[in-house]
Image 1 (spheres, rainbow, N blue to C red):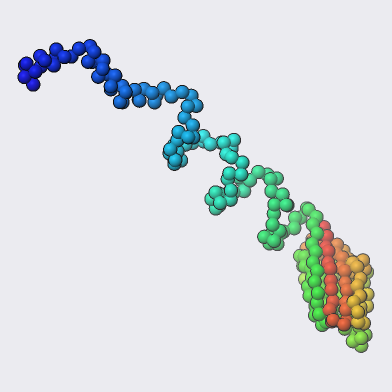
Image 2: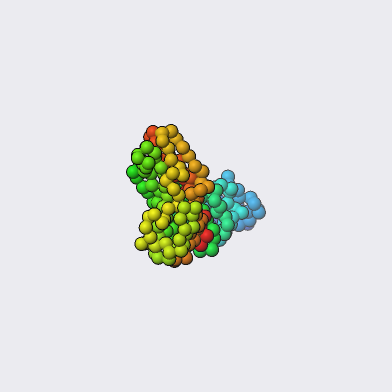
Length: 245
């Protein structure tokens, strides 16, 4: 720039020119920055936020508490597999109503808490089935013809795989029940107690039952309901056992 041009520029550099230029600067840039730093409290709402503007990196650690989560907002699909462990579940929060019993396997019996086991089913003429087993003790139900094959009877037997187990029943009793005990001394019912010559006949669990203590410590009471029907060659059984120890 020549000397004459510089003189002309200085002559035009008035107070009004400087203030005008400064005002343009504030409007185009500086004013916006000042305004951004002076936003009023609660002036930015969800409408002012651009979609997807708030990412997980923008959220302060531990800033989202339970009170901030909408009820029912967290569904099963939102929970990572394996992320909920036993220590994360509140004691007593899961009751029997929340447990699907069909998903359970064999539940062990506590040594101090009483429990009840039960079963039922049918067997055909000439068949036998173990209908209950606890420790070394087994109860077997038989469905067989007797009295010259004119009657079909149902009969329960007890057995122990260890010697010196104890049992009582209306039919037999022993303090020496073991692997060598003959079947005739292990009867819990008589075959004639529940029999049929044709149509269905039944007996509730009153007579067929007993109390048992194995030599290994297991103990229980048991009741068995029985029914027979010679016309269909079928025997029924219903068993309930109350575990004592």
